Image (cartoon, rainbow, N blue to C red):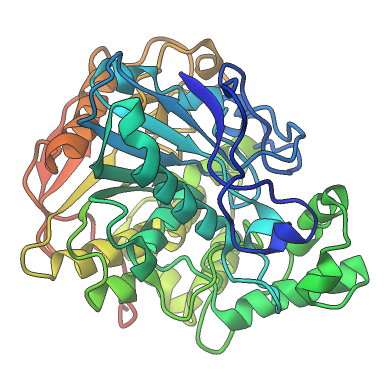
Length: 471
């Protein structure tokens, strides 16, 4: 393990709003035996669900937080496949020192695993005149350049790099694939519960910038923001979540859950449809009950009403009443909470992932693979189910971590199915090594798709969702 290795200069002062630059050399031997600091962020909780393993310990102060952690097999010869992980956390929280992202099982299985810190919140994603756009995404690209230049010294093959991420990290991963600047930096990508249509338009981002400037009492420009302390920039974030991001041409892709995302003129799915990233092997999927994470921990899965479903639909669709009617017909007998969860899943993850998969699979010679993770966690009295993030302990093969087990923990009471973590982890390893996870490639619009649970099942496509002309 090599911990807290800098891949870029510390983002302090005005540099918080600049593109990342290489770190200055150090003299002697760098101590890489201690966890490094993390990006400025507020404490993060999700109602009754214990998520410390996911969010980590929060803000660990220190200027040198643009770092990577590296787990590597015991070898001095380069040639091992490399996997680079981008954490989630709504673009405002999380770090590479969260216990869930222990890379030891990857190294055990012959992979060099790299986990990345990147700028969050205002420094990372507020769209500021006078500053480059998407600084958190630029950090990930800089980390990939660091990997290309240095990973051979850790036993890795710089020509066989798989970028993978979950949630916000998955949306960033999709945006990296769709960015011409990523050419030559990665061979494969895994998008776990991301959104190929999750980018804010510049118009939407400008609303957040204006709101932040008003709350801070400064001009909406990088020069003015450079004088604001990190503490104040963190404090202002919760007050930005109520901004209405719906425009004449776009709904809120994050359904009000975060005031930040990548900001693009063209959605990643559209850029990939145009040919960008067609030569990058893609593994992409979602969880069967994604939306439960945003309801069950707050007691609203069982108490949601039809009005709640309609209010959620209004954030997502220009025809909310028609959409809800179609959703009801597609799920006869579903409760309002189940409909609301399904709607959140479709808006936040499923639709955008499906579009990104279709865009990628449309190109001759591209290799696209899809999955749905369907094992249901018994946490929160059985309400959590196959919610957002539940697949992560299986991918990292760490289902034995104490912080993940318990009535209010991610995996619930009891022992997860024997072999499920090993098999899921092995599929991700196989994809990184060979470009094939162990099931047939996806064909646009009609599967096949691997449904991952106690029993693995190949299915053709998924339940059709109500489309724009449904009803």
